[in-house]
Length: 286
Image 1 (spheres, rainbow, N blue to C red):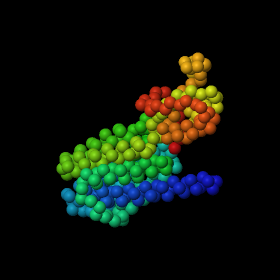
Image 2: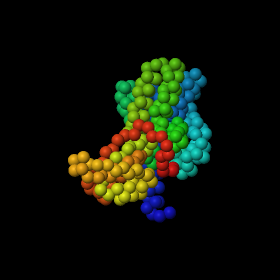
Image 3: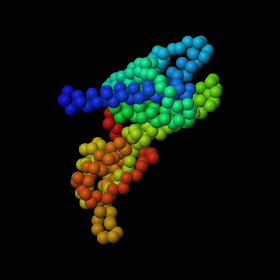
Image 4: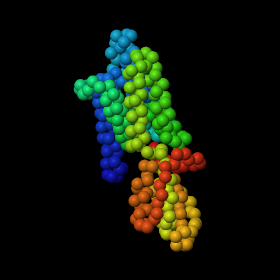
């Protein structure tokens, strides 16, 4: 392994460990403190902990429930998404589980709404750091990535809907106030993830250029996506114009625009958010 690649892998591991620490801090200082539940397997683990504590009078460590719950999703990820991706995810799962049991709880606020909002921000940030480091926080995130890889669409909204079901069940058992604030937390968390992690979101490029071949080479080399060349007439000067149409992932857009400017400073570029794309769309394998 080259030194540059080794450094990149070390940076990913450090980022994942930091995300696990942030995740554990959030669970102990915002979720536990306000009696809130996160979504996914974290929320399910906290729900099981609460049920065991209330009805059996026992305190079960977070890791004892959380790690076994992730076993089957991890196997699915290993088979269908990628081995390295799964190993990185397991690092987060193990670290966050252990840290949740040992990170101290500080009395930050008694305001349940503040806990819901800031808990959602920290939860979404920790998960986004994982995703940007080519890993997940486990559980339903495995499922979301699997759906996104298989069907080429951003699946976080579907996961949010599933999480709401868990939270509604919590409302039936423990009361609706905490459940409704937990839904706010999950909504904020999902919004943060969609803002920070844009891999499965798409942008349409319409590029008017005098150097169509050079611009196309930039798109192909940066993203491995194709482009379509249209010929038209610029009405102001009555001259023939070239327009390239292409769709790329949102997380690639800034790099692509920067490289296009290097080959054609005068290029006119229109960037539009693509709500839905049908047909083959290339994603870099995990």
